[in-house]
Image (cartoon, rainbow, N blue to C red):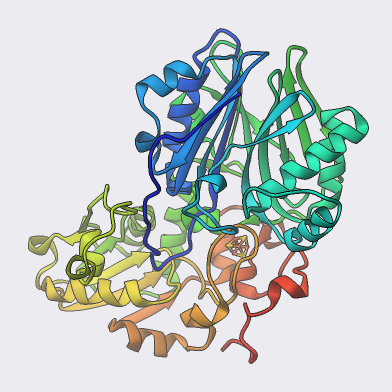
Length: 486
Ligand code: SF4
């Protein structure tokens, strides 16, 4: 087993929007360059986590991992990929929701030993009973190296694997104890495992490479980049093992009420991914069309806020007849920089990330389509930026309902107090951001755009109805004492 640090920790900033959780990727493909497949898979999943990245590969005998803080191309060099030799492996891109972000120990894949064997694990999601489980495990003599819920999963798998003398038994028993959102890939020196929580909060898909190898990934865009074809979703509550005997599947825990995160459709997942048989690009276009129907406005141009606002802006333009134009260009590689800007540069705020096309928007009444407003500060800066660039009116159209409740299932939406819609009306928010008008998409129209029913989704950050119970200890300090505004 090799466990290597590549460079020093870097710093991050905390943008004003929901933060993605993580991306996971797994491959079992004898005869293929597995490390390279994972490397490119992680590139496609970079949007789901930019704080750390890691790859673990095994050849049947030895398991090697390279991981560090940073973006995928910052963490891996050609020489790293050359050392990662084997026919199976897993990879991870991380944004932390539990555990300090800028610690190497919290980067994944996470390694642990079961007797003479090693497992590596990568997790997308967030457990809601981590505190309880950590206390129980500490009482039973477990020692933890990191502060993540993923290490709790790894510790439980270790413990029960030794008890049952079977990894599948260990995972099965672990899935019965852990509560919350988890899409996990796990490997030993010989086999790849994947399992998903019984509600299916975070996505997890199965694909096949052109040479018959298996791939598991958070999103279909990560299958596309390695030329794999989509086979099916990993079913909520399912555990898959892929090894020398091929693919074996079992329903490790019964499926519960499905609760796929609707924010995957609004913002997190890439537009070229397909979720629940629905193209994300088309779902976002339909969200924009619905906005044009429910909140029409007289204007000269429709622009989208890159990247997620683009398809919805096209939908708004198509449905309203108002021309669509590119009005903002993203400073693509600054978005989540790991080099802290100086104080004077930081004051530039949104200008570091977005540059308005002045000659396009000057003198125009704009419809500006964005995916969400969380704390409100970025939207206020955006409106000011567009007006400074000469826009005569700015009409914000948001393709999700007001975010009023915090997320406990793997998305960092902070405490309720920091959510502007939790104690401000739409008119108060409009005034705060300085827009000429503001409208949000309804829960019904957002769900309808995905082609499914509301009871298949988690909608908790909009409705406050949590599909998985949150323990009191986890809720503490996260909610306002008084109810959010209607
Ligand atoms: S609370 Fe919101 S962000 Fe969290 S899983 Fe549910 S829908 Fe997604």
